[in-house]
Image (cartoon, rainbow, N blue to C red; front, side):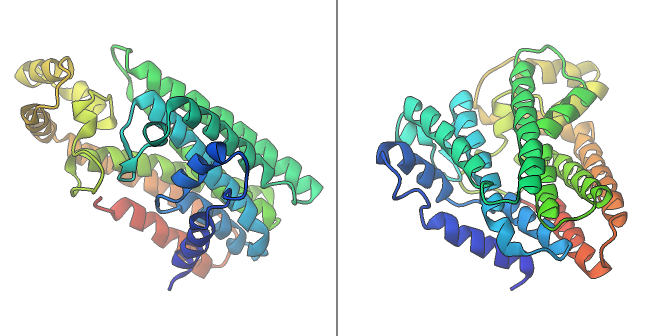
Length: 323
């Protein structure tokens, strides 16, 4: 079992054990254990452990901060699902449907508070540095979510605006997860910032690949194929298509994105337009470019090459995935 798989198993065991089962009232904390226990790759807490490992730190000191990252991530998912009126999360009923909306809001808040509690055992200076980074990241994620919501009614979303939205909503947490691990290992600031930049660029590539896979990936259990097209979401595929579409392609694209329907004809028609305009190829080029940008920051970090190779292989595995 490789190191990342070991960390995934460790975090999985801690979360599957229902960390809040003894907390009262049960009606508040059971939804927290529910969302933490329904799976996922747990990549963000793994990155915190990996950030500590890279610089030779004591990984046991990174476990609680790693859990803080996962608690916070799931708090955002609980609230995002309410805003998106999503019925499923990882193939299971979302918290607000399994329980109710008010419970999901309050339990999400409780999970956020519990995420901060995981930093309490840190030494004073590390506590200050990590909580400062964590709080900055939390605010940025809220900003990213608001931008994403703004895009729903914004007539046109430009490429730079979209990249900034996914940087805030998705990527900064990946960068912070890695840097928090590095802080625990007492890495120097230059290496920490390069690790953060690696994570942010990898996170952008990761989200662009998610957009791509929604339309062109293999079928994923519990996820609607081309759900972004059905929901008229202004993803990178749509934004790039709009930049180059002309004539009938443009007319048809605007027609379908002005129509709210789950008719399969819409999915096939938009997929065909994307292919005609070669935006699938354009987006894959962008994914590779942001991956390479992240790896360039990894090359600058002063750690042995065998440790860099763990992150390098991890980055490639994320970008090469087909679901």
